[in-house]
Image 1 (spheres, rainbow, N blue to C red):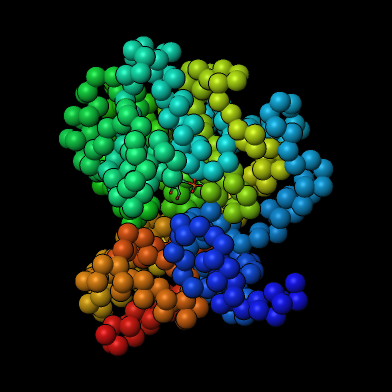
Image 2 (cartoon, rainbow, N blue to C red; image 1 turned 60 degrees about the horizontal axis):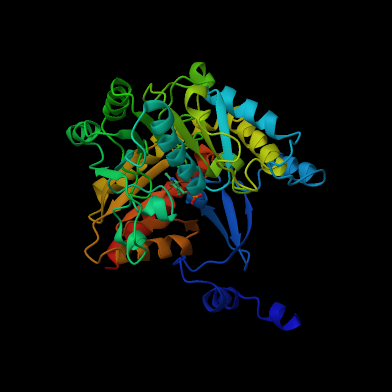
Amino acid sequence: MELEIKHSTAEYLMSLEDEFGAHNYHPIPVVLSKGKGVYVWDVNGKRYYDFLSAYSAVNQGHCHPRIINALTKQAQNLTLTSRAFYNDQLGLFEKRVCELFGFDKVLPMNSGAEAVETSLKLCRKWAYKTKGIPQNEAKIIFAKNNFHGRTLSIISASTDPTATENYGPYMPGFILVDYNNLDAMKTALNEPNVAGVIIEPIQGEAGIVVPDPGYLKAVRDMCADRNILFIADEVQTGLARTGKLLAICGNCTCENKCENNYEIKPDVLILGKALSGGIMPVSAVLANNDIMLVIEPGTHGSTYGGNPLACAVSVEALNVIEDEDLAGNAKRLGIIFRNKMQELVDQSELVVKVRGKGLLNAIVINDSEEGEIAWNICVKLKENGLLAKPTHGNIIRFAPPLVMTEEQILDCCKIISETVLDFEASM
Ligand code: PLP
């Protein structure tokens, strides 16, 4: 034990992960031991702005005191019952989520991927029991370059070889279309036995790809015309990240408080990540009774899904989003951020584009070295006190906690601009 403490340097801790952990990630070389609000600290006490927010799970900021309070209070009473029994937190969570997002029912799960899986199962079951598609013939449409998680069925619809190679055989019943291409979507929707379309309102892992205005509404309308379920995966874009409670904001109770992005309501809504404020895995699938009630007792579930600890944490995580108007803050700061990054695009040969909504943004690097430049810029950003990570090689995603202040975002824009320009000068 003493030996371990003596060697508890960043290098030692990284070497442990390297030696004993599976090599399924390639982290930026920094070892974090503390987080508060928009900041994280490494084991040597160096402070950084967190511009990843654990892939948008920490929208409420690290260790938000209200959510931690809810966690510790509930942890002393009851943490897990399984769904074999009722618990005194689940119903309260379900009511809160359903009322906030304007749906009849919610099905709680844990990870985002599990919620996506749940939505696919729900869609298939609805197809057979309600729509009348012949058994085993149901098809679900996905967009190319999607990211919905890592399970076998989800990667079966992935177009990213890194996610799929050597993991076959793949799940049948999926159709792939170009994102943001209405003709391609229409052709696919007209195929026989289509049960649903699953879509990210902004493609996150693909590099913050924002569709043209009107695209999602047109897809939604085409689905409604054909009795096909429109499933919105808001695991990354949801919960105030893009400047709205939902990127695809529709008929929910936030309607009067926030201006809707797309004026659309999906048939099925998938939430995850920030549903717990980065405290623990909590995800959810929402739908109205005509869809959700096709699932009967015993036909789907999860031991931890809907556990009282997760429910108490999640209710407080949602309260924080509303009480602190994180959507409004993300919208306001997002405009400042993109304006500053546009100035960088104008000054730099290396940064060719900035795009995004709210505080889900990315810069595109003119990277002739297949992602190496973007990676090296992120390493320099780290040295300068800001943590970000490339997604898809030459794209750097910037997604800080939504509790950021204007002064902080301006400071961050300065760090990013100076780092990129210094890097460019040294090339
Ligand atoms: N769906 C989307 C849109 C995501 O961005 C992600 C994760 O990044 C997932 C699903 C999967 O979530 P999890 O990693 O919690 O399984």
